[in-house]
Length: 102
Image 1 (cartoon, rainbow, N blue to C red):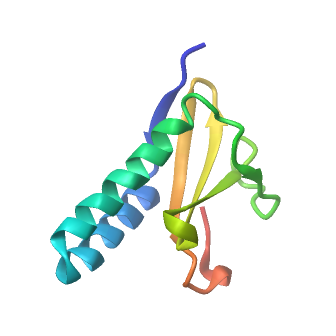
Image 2: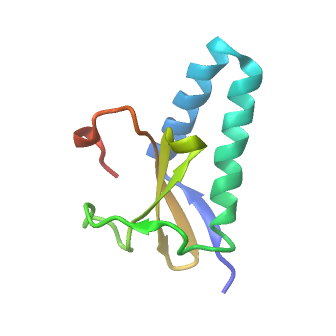
């Protein structure tokens, strides 16, 4: 079965927040980081089980995995649901982890 990427609204918002924050500092950096996140997500199409299983979340239809990206500054949370790899969050690791929800 061929898998497809699907981005949750929270993940898209996270990605927009990342881009907008870095755009003010350096537009080229913002574009590079944005593209790196997209590239990391696309790698999941070939290796969907590469991320570490994260047992904190039980409210999702699939096993939640996390992948450390952007030199450890962010974590991508995702799960497989049918033919979709759902990107649930692109989490800034400098935030309070108690606020993390999918």
